[in-house]
Amino acid sequence: MIRDLFDRHNKIWRAAFIVVGVIVSVIQFLRIARRPPGDFPLHWTSGHFIATGEFLYTRNINYPYPPFWGFVHSTLAWIPMETAYLLVYPLFFVALYVLVRVLNRLSEVHFPLGKNELFWMVTVAILLSSRYLIRDMLECGVNLALVAAAWLAVYLWREKKELQGSLILGFAMALKCTPSLFWVWFILKREWKMAGLTFLAAACFTLSPMLKLGYAEYDRTVRHWVFNVMHGFKEKDPSKGIAGPVPIANMSLRITLARYLMHFPRDHEGRMKTPLYVDFLNLPPVTAGRIISLSMLVFLIFIAWLFRRHYDDRSDERILWECAVLSILILLYSPVTWGQHCVGIFPGVYLLIRSSMSQKHFTKPLKVGIGLFVFLVLILNRAFIGKFYSELLGTYHTSTFLFLGIIGFLLSRHFRVTRGKTAEAALQPVQEHAPVTA
Image (cartoon, rainbow, N blue to C red; front, side):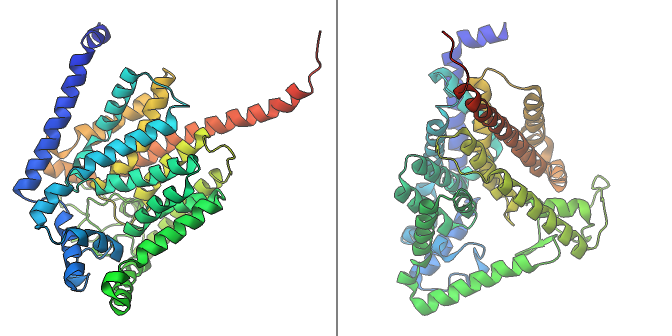
């Protein structure tokens, strides 16, 4: 009955969801116009420093970001920060459009859908990722743009347009180190042309701030950035990062595992003073750090082993599942993962929903997983349960475990395709030598 009612008023429901999306977008725009709430002021300041000749990392502003990030933002230095913020805001919608179009092009052969089904599939994927998409709106979609750039590079590679794809991926890598995982994937696949061109593109973009800064200032700036990054990597206490104690909101895998393997100090930013905050194991920080580093390395090696095959067919379905896993691994292995960065789950969510709708079959585990995700991420959020309980839930890093769960579903689809290909290959010689009957 409910489905019939929904089908009869399909156009009305579609219009309603579009209106809700517009309302949310306008609200975020008004928040930006009233009081800049995101990190864009810091990014604009970085660009202003480069444009005016001031040292890029003055007062350690934006120190996790490489110099090219500030160099790109220097193009906005002549515009007042508040105006620039509003002008860049539409980047979010451009990035979302590009990402959805690219995902559609990559998956339409394997998971065909009609226009109406496609609309609702995209709507469901957006709804499931909405908490992170809405947060990235306040950052003008820069994180979504990086995800879209990586997937666009994969699409262009599939179309044998390595030069264009390498320029896009190299640009993203120079802006932020995390998209480099896609470059590593191309190396793993022995796609040497794409990997080589991408490296050259990333190197050129990375060196380009020298045109503005000059060699001496550029060298000073890069050394400062590298020092900060290496300082974070050398930290043996997993509860600390580049900027000291890691806050509650950080969803990276390192701090998540640290939460369960050791007791954070009483004044730690990731700890809350409430009986509802429960400690678990109490390993020494150095021991916990070693266990975490080893576990993360083993998991990464395991993924690399699974993805080791070179595919002659660039339209192989497994490429979709592998790239979706990469997008989430970036979140888990990055030392800093805030809510706005978690738009990286969107491709994986999109593909899981699309494949299930195309095959008209949602497995019971996937239904349970979606229900759990909706409850823990969309319902138990700050808007419904308040700041205190939202932060308390954040101390248990449930979102990080959900991201690992999404990877589990993606890998299961990858396994299924691999099994099918293996069975196909095993049957082929039998079919070739089968006797011909009259």
